[in-house]
Structures are given as structure tokens and as C-alpha cells.
Image (cartoon, rainbow, N blue to C red; front, side):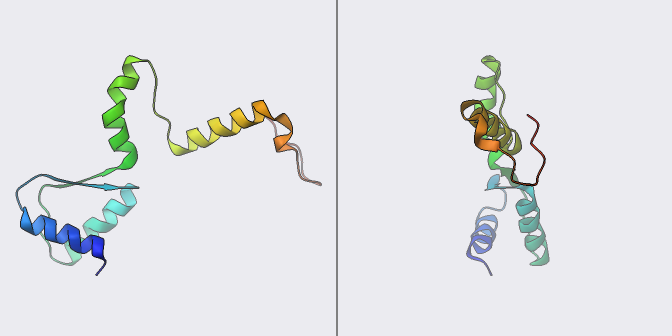
Length: 104
């Protein structure tokens, strides 16, 4: 059994009624952990999962909203970085030979 899963099992068994949070990089990982707990026959009441993005949104969201800002997901962030790079260095996205040019 993976060490992380073993730690989660030990936690839910040691603190069966206390609220517990597990931070995962994606909900798919959380679902996998939950399925593994079920398959092992582990009761996991009061165990909640959240992603790093959701946690950041809960922590920083109110302050960003007051400043009329929003969080970007990873796809939006990559797009913003690409646009900023192209603004600074327009020839960075020259088409490869034999391929059509990229529209901005």
C-alpha cells in the first residue's frame, strides 16, 4: 500500500469523527483515494477533499474580489503568459517551415 494512502487510513481511524481535509492536485486524485478507501473497507466519515486551486480560491478569493480581480486556472495562466511573451517578442511564434502562420 502506498505510504500516503496508509497515512490517510491511519488519520481517519485515529480521528473518526473529527473533520479532516486532504489537499490534492486534482479531483481525479481525490476520487481515486476515496475509491481506494472504499475498496479497503475503510470508513471515512468527515474526510473532505479539495484541490490546490480551490484552496487558493477560498483563501485569496475574497481579497481578490475586493480588488476586482479573479483567479486564473492553469489554461488561462498559460495563455496570458504566452500573450505577454508575444507582446514583448513578436517573432517568438514564427511558423515552422511548411506550416501556416499562427493568428494572434
